[in-house]
Amino acid sequence: MYAGHFAAGLAIKARVPKAPTLWLLIGTGLLDILFGPFVLMGIERVTMTPGRPPGFSLDFIDWSHSLLMALVWSALYGLAFLKRGREMAFVLGFAVFSHFLLDLPMHPHDMALWPFSHTHLGFALWHTPYWWWAELAFIVAGCGYYWMRARQIGTFGGRAGWACLVVVVLHVLNAPWLSGNA
Ligand SMILES: [Zn+2]
Image 1 (spheres, helix red, strand yellow):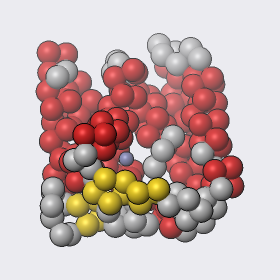
Image 2 (tube, rainbow, N blue to C red; image 1 turned 45 degrees about the vertical axis):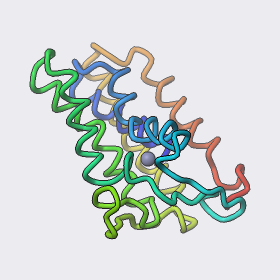
Image 3 (cartoon, rainbow, N blue to C red; image 1 turned 180 degrees about the vertical axis):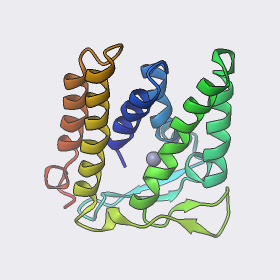
């Protein structure tokens, strides 16, 4: 999942309004944020496959995206917020783990249980024409919930409409018929 991770961050914000929005959004994207430097360091591998959806093959992403490491990163991230209380630590840790949960339906069997495990998870929606619409549905639900709660509660989301629009635009820019990977 791509822009959907931001929709998840907004939805968590809507559920727990006192959670810090920026750290929620960084948290929901953290596994991909780690993936970039891990590839540069050579401990994770990706191959570009232009024209074949999703346009790349994630050959080894066990340090950022395995189940065990997702739990480790979630725990570490949550612990960093422990001084704000246990609930906040849990919420921010969950934001990180939500990335794993949302990648699970999309990734084609490349998410290991733990580093170098031979068992891989992922339901491969990325290999079907439906992934973009499935992610759009999630974005509409997550952003819709954020927008609705922002209007009800009024203590956050003064620009909820714009925030939702940015997420939808990011998703539209990522459409397979634009990238040539349809
Ligand atoms: Zn990811």
